[in-house]
Amino acid sequence: MSSTPQSHNPPARMITREDAQRLAEADARATGMGPAVRGAYLRHEISGREPLIYGGPNLDSCWIVYIEPLKVDLRSSIVVLVDRSTGAILYRGSANDEG
Image (cartoon, rainbow, N blue to C red):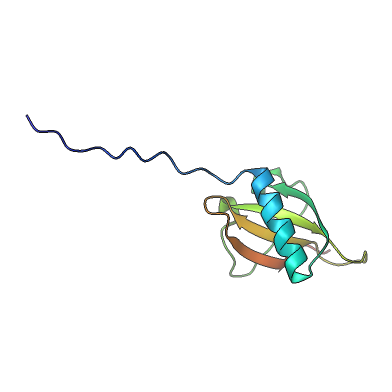
């Protein structure tokens, strides 16, 4: 009786909310988008208008991290989208949620 070797790789660790906030804050500071994070959310946790990213990644696979703007005025929110599987920054910029 022969047996097939089984892979014993642990399941991939998903990026936590805290990880996403840390990654997005570092990215926002490095790119001059803003000084701090307001919060990281899953798509279904957003109570207002969700980001509308034209040609962007699927929001269901991302942490949507809102960035504190450098100056307060009437404009779209600033977001950084962090891939929930890899931690890669998939988008940074306007959430196109004004109005």
